[in-house]
Image (cartoon, rainbow, N blue to C red; front, side, top):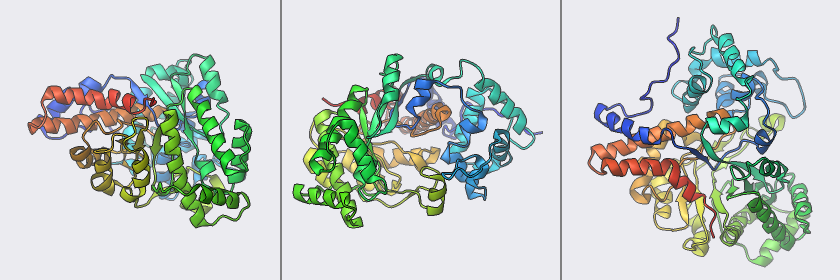
Length: 473
């Protein structure tokens, strides 16, 4: 029989005993702090409708591409895990069978952050004390299902149980924001806020671009068949997001290029795109131009800009065609920032009305490019490790590579970047433990006093993210 599933109180803290002792004390200062979750992908309707969660697999496996991609990498199909096909073809609908596939393959997650998050959820959120396996699968499923059936285990109630003070959703520029209006009526409008993501309307070579731009125009009551009308509609929609409580924008581009085009050139590329004549090179140039334009809009309206380039999305075309986006086949690419961001920073880098948070999945640029940029431009904050880097060792490397140049206070604090709602506390907990360990080493090396380290730990967990995402102006 396997040993019970328990969480060691010193998990993810340093192994060296004297440093671990300091880290315990520092972690105790942050463990109970509220969570500020300003970059996430939980749908607004989850809170406005406040439904019961479906079942263990529907909550913890099927929607979480961190989990499904590992199982797919070992030969399972997305259909085996209940991932819906675009064409409506049959997929596994037996939640218990999907859950069993995870438990039978629990060993695959050894050493991964997914293992840390899932164990935290099982023990802390669901009260499970059984190690996942083929023998324990049904018992764990039943225990989680019983918890999901309780009235206090609804999304809105979990905001309090998880100590979530503020959480953002990520919404396309074409969102009606209807769910956020409902949240405002329910008294949650300042706690669950939208984030403006215009990617679908600035990448002019995407298949549905014209449809999305027309929808943008309808919502903004602007003629978006022209470049000038397109910009007018974007400004209008940003104001709608601000009225709904929005604090930030979010931009996922392949490149970090921010080179502006001449007005006449941008107008011409937009016209060519509208007529279906745009080239790949023109589309790439227009995307970079729009990052510069969006920076200007952020300077004007105060929304904090988030840029996270460097991901080749939907890497496997057949999977994308069958299942759509965000199914685990997004792969990082090397990304250049110093030259690419210079046009934007020349224009707005020292403007007190502008704030940009830079993320990366290319950790080779932390010390060479991003930390030096954040370490001198007042408008720039360096975003936390995310996606493939929000792991214990990835977070440690981030602190080691970035802190000497950028310090702590030119970073953003932690962001959880997840659709997996129940994993949010686990992700923040891991970040706080890693920061406690890093700070403890500085104390042990007599580079910080313990009082300074404790103050910094609290700032990283709570004060810095609130300040980083405060709307400018």
